[in-house]
Length: 61
Picture (cartoon, rainbow, N blue to C red):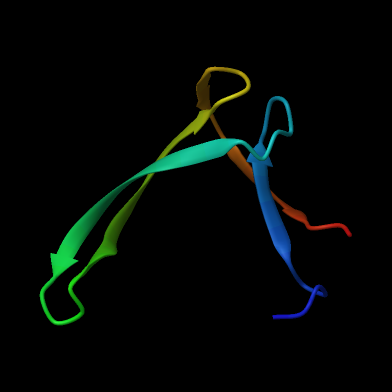
């Protein structure tokens, strides 16, 4: 994907991209690797050090 149309996800409180979400992964025997199987709504900001909401923004530069 080119730069046009790219997005970034940030903390709704401080606009930091340093966020993570909870997820489950499952072992895939065929590929011999972990595959993301479930993504949850819980998000954590590592700058605010608390739970947050995620905002999607257009990536710049």
